[in-house]
Image (cartoon, rainbow, N blue to C red):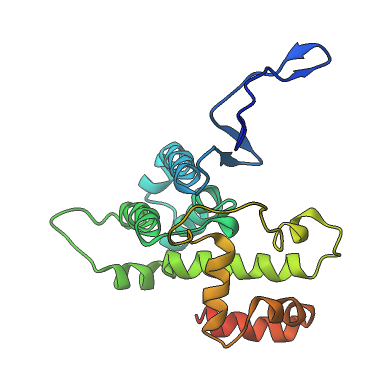
Length: 215
């Protein structure tokens, strides 16, 4: 896969051509030329659907308690779904798609089928769940604090401050992961430069996390 390159010559390593692809998976995340997280989220949803289907005997069990089933769901399905979500840029439509899947799974675990209905708020109360937007936001800021405390030579920290060279196209700039962090930090009156200093104090960062992601 090549980005921003007009060179179509084959790439060789040890005299062998390297296969050219339109996308690939690296550490569980999908990398493609257009960027974004749509394809990555769809891949995680498909994997989570498969994991949930494999555990059908658990959801149908009359022996296991609701609490046990929910714990199994969180450890074996939800963990698959949210793997790497710390680096997702989540739009409203994408978070809604993830939330719909989770709600559907929880209703099946609780055996709530039509015509019986239950509100999402009551569903989350019975299963002790939080809205998915809030959970992703919490994981995102925990990861950010952990990364900002790393030494400067770590690639994961360097990439946070990396700026692309050249000129961008005219028009409104795209909302990126970093820009989403900057917008969220404005809620508590902080700029990007303030975050690195705040992350060094774990107690201060926990308080910041509580302000941004209230339980």
